[in-house]
Image (cartoon, rainbow, N blue to C red; front, side):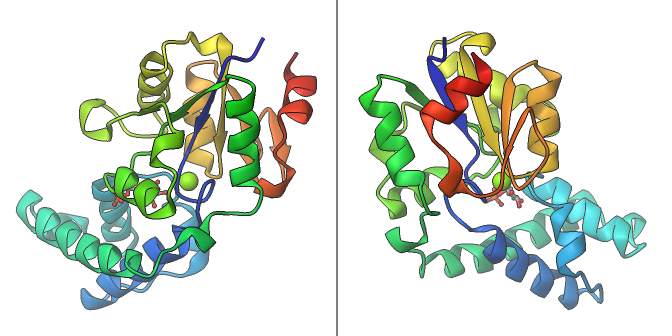
Length: 213
Ligand code: BG6
Ligand code: MG
């Protein structure tokens, strides 16, 4: 019996992935590295610092940057990203998500968030969804970022449920790996998982319950 659903944020609830890409591309270009959309796929679900480290490794310059340089660069990227968020509105909630959340709430199913984004609460607030989520796992409090399972385990704990009472929804490979690492049932949006759906519009409690139960 499903009692809770754990959502990823970027790419599942809203399409902020394209804003992360713009900000990372500009930051990378400013230090002489170019990234494309294919490389950007490998950054989905990856924390801010780990994303920059991947970019520096991709550019072959990882050893030229100290921890302090990394802090300065990640702050710079985040400043641009937060500016881009100013244009975000309720219209940017991905198709089907509001209906699906309503369906969950109508059925007394708990909702948790397992995003590694430190901007998650702010984004939910902009989208008008903050009061629809029962618990937001704090990425600053978990030891390891996705693909480690920590953030999903913390989110299930926060909504007071065991791993086998919930399923999680992800759009990134790292996120699906994180769920697999703690045996959480997974729905992938455009990515292979226990149950793969092509878009958020395909989400429905009936379909998912049929598959998992
Ligand atoms: C994830 C995104 O949700 O959050 C990543 O998929 C991003 O692309 C990560 O790097 C961290 O986000 P933020 O907002 O803390 O920089
Ligand atoms: Mg995501």
